[in-house]
Length: 243
Ligand SMILES: C[S@@+](CC[C@H](N)C(=O)[O-])C[C@H]1O[C@@H](n2cnc3c(N)ncnc32)[C@H](O)[C@@H]1O
Image (cartoon, rainbow, N blue to C red):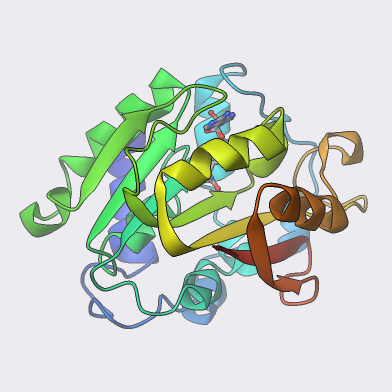
């Protein structure tokens, strides 16, 4: 089974998004955790620290799609933070393999998988054609620039950065550019690794602290609605809105 087939199989069978749970139900983390995933500490092996455009692609895909992620990142819970997505366009900035983007497709009007790495754009495009037709129409990829997510003016109602914010340089300016592609009141969700030595994620010196994220969002003109350091063991979750 090639990696795309495996990925689609995992999305359909493992995450239970398109068949088992119906469109409006939040993806459940617990059943997946009980049935298929190894205990979290099984990931304590040294992982490659992914870098934009670099690294062995197969290793990056394996890392982004690792089964233990559903336990420590709780994608269903995370997605539920965004509330009702019906009629909304979501931009997944630094979408990678589409771990979150494809989970959002059944819930949103449209999902844009934004990435600067053409390999991930091709990967997501190859997954898209395996989706049921009604979902294919709701998903598109967007090859972006390092300093610009390449959204059209007021194109998105929601932007998410999962495990990606630390990759952005000149983040305040990036957020200001992003804001032009967002509607007024749009939500921005940022999830990244806490600054502790953790069994998953990059080394501490690559991380951006929660307080730094809040500062940068405020400087770029966003209002921080909630900053949660507790819901996830390894990561903080920041929800902001465009004023
Ligand atoms: C660690 S991966 C996270 C992928 C995905 N969000 C996930 O949670 O599985 C970081 C991703 O961000 C992308 N990336 C890095 N810098 C970026 C930038 N300036 N704009 C958009 N994407 C970027 C990388 O190519 C990579 O796919």
